[in-house]
Image 1 (cartoon, rainbow, N blue to C red):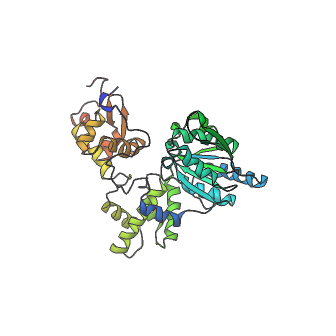
Image 2 (image 1 turned 90 degrees about the horizontal axis):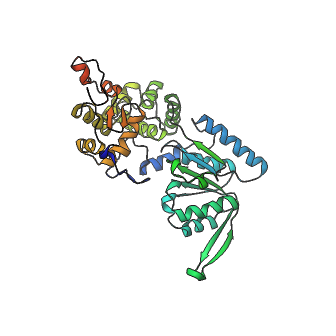
Image 3 (image 1 turned 60 degrees about the vertical axis):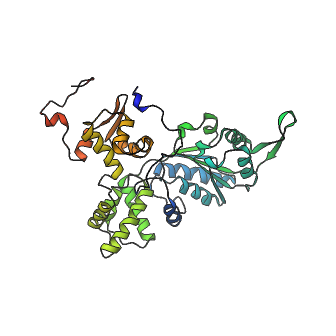
Length: 363
């Protein structure tokens, strides 16, 4: 165990000091407004997630054929992959209204009871970040999902009385970025579960072309490919980069997004060819130049970068690990050969003409 890497942040807590990043997957105010206009309205229009789309289409068609509400649906995956969009599509495909709330907003069983008691028959309840719901509300949800009934407790102490409240059939769509934090009794009550995968560059190009058409932006195929390659496999990031490149093209060029224009624009916004931004490169640069590629403890690395420990761990590291540029080990963080190559640096072993092999406890 590396004693420098103890006490991880609580699940669901935001990383303090996390900057507003152009390549961040969480939605900001501008994203929320723009995404409403860019969201596809049905499964046919939804780009990517082919297996999830096919399975979900079968579930919804069967429910419509039976004249019943659809099974409860659990969507898991990283932010920005389309979980909210799919929940709205489920409601649209079922011809039902949708109610949207989130786990952190439900801190008491009474909060959940108020929402459930006001649902209409067949309505879709979208519960984002469902793993962050309070335990009392979670236990109430078990009965609501299975029996369409909740027990409302009136009074306190020995005189408390449980009043059963019947609910109309509804469909719960839960979304989570951490499916492993859901207790098994809750997870088992979902009739359909799906994991959202990161998008391939070709799929992101389709997303970008579709969004460009809706935003009335002229873009060449090579320009879309350039943006897609820097979008970290996430449609939300692709759409955000598209808007920033559009701004650059309108001010610095004739409005047409080509590969060269996209590359120049994203260089201004400090997003490199692999989608790394200033924070990502600062972490890798410190790890390589100051600590020779590691291993180094997380807290030490955070101090070297000038960021909070949680910012490095929760904001920068996931993508660096996924890209194969950084590895977490019991001894600390280490850089991979791909990290040295990406920053154009030579590993110390090669500089000294060594064999490049290192023992368990050093050279």
